[in-house]
Image (cartoon, rainbow, N blue to C red; front, side):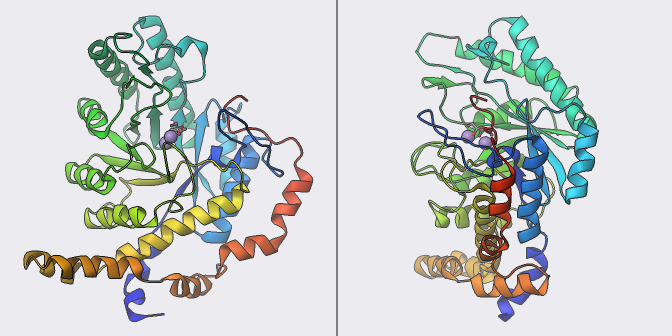
Length: 388
Ligand code: LRH
Ligand code: MN
Ligand code: MN
């Protein structure tokens, strides 16, 4: 291992990435949901698959739930089951986007009865968190309108505040709320939480336990996401990431697949702003594997995050700061690009082996026969949730 790599291994060992339970279910576009052999038939099997990813990588000790997709009778028992598998239950994601009642909004709906129904769903999510020991409640809202004039944008912000405040007040001392923004879809004209500024304004009005969730796929093309990361860290309000990658819209592709350089730039700002290995900033994936196998899809994803984190940690910060102060434009850029172009795969493979992990988790999983085994055992796996 190189000396430079040696200097950052202690930091690397701290990396934790939470997996989304829904990444293991079948998912698709509005055109088709393909069934993938070996897909879990139950919440327990999704957790077992997440635990498999952790066994091969050492990177994914927690799995996030989505309610109601991951509904079970006994969440304490589910917590124990997860622990037996070697993972913890993490963020609880609420879902108020599939019921007919929410056609015109949920927490932002003009009818107080509908808002209350959506608030009650979040109360149930907090009950789940109490049983699972989860810290974070993640709220992503599909709320918005399709046509100018359809709804009163201003009132909806006020209703949103009231609804969020009611949910916030129910959180325990050690619990948090993270509010995720997305610039469009399924609403096409306006979305009630479209951007980091709106999320920041809403969570700031609530208090310290409310933070912003940044989903990397939820921005307009060309958005400088690392700037948003820097700003939110500076403000102390970056609560979590939903990592994925996109070519066009909310593609939910494997993180680092579409634009590894963007992932690197984001991670550089995370490290710079003290957000790395900081419990206040949860690293999570939010992905769907529509045409590829799901367990290796998740293994690839966490490895991509690890690889770009390694490169970000290798950035020569002192030299960069010096070059920046000297206004050495090209020198500073070269230092930055040097870190990005560093091939860390060999060092990472050696380091994994030194920790009892497979040098190449993708190859080890492929050779293990696990995929064939679950394909034979599991017949009739379920969808992630959509259309289920
Ligand atoms: C919708 C979405 C959002 C949530 C996830 C469950 O855009 O992808 O990012 O986190 O569904
Ligand atoms: Mn997301
Ligand atoms: Mn999304």
